[in-house]
Length: 262
Image 1 (cartoon, helix red, strand yellow):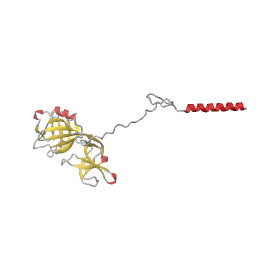
Image 2: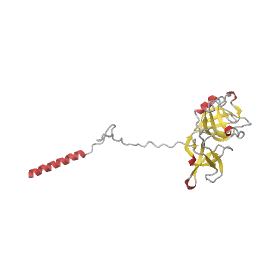
Image 3: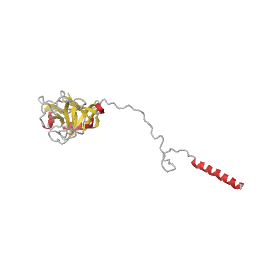
Image 4: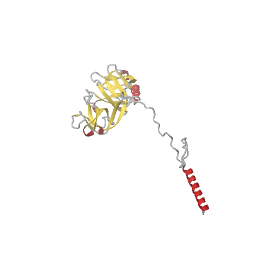
């Protein structure tokens, strides 16, 4: 009987030893291709290594714009009872989606967010406030277009550096190209032909003399079938380029680009 009890104790000790051997973890293998007992690849350690911190890029040359999601009234102040500045339609007279240049924002009563925008209406240069909910997501550009009426030149800058320059035709003295700060509203190919060249850009600027023209007398930037007249004061207010130049501009200038006419 003592012999049987001794044998049982020995078997119990051996069983505990074997169990301890199975439960003992194996050294971790983090090498590529190593697998767990379940057949799954082991995670690479560390799973994430933060990179070197870098400062955010400068926003000095960035401008914002937004699509108009629904027709809206622009007001003098961020208040639904403020005086009306202009109606902002969802589509342009040319049938494209309308955009506005974003100049700022402000949270008003009850946390409602308003956006200060440039509006395409007479008199030129008007700004107003619209509810943020009337606009789509913001787009950004780092370009700026400058038209010099005295020197008859068009200059495109990116982050403050000149990337394109060309001679232009501007409005005659009787129908001048308006001065001021505007933006490029759309890019148009439906007007392609001898008169307007291969393509045109619509701007937010409007002629103060020809507001009764079709589509409201908006100022365009386009090609021409009379390149020999450029540079010069030859148009009814639009900005004309030689066809090769307007195509070169189109490769570099996105919609939403701010426009300064001086």
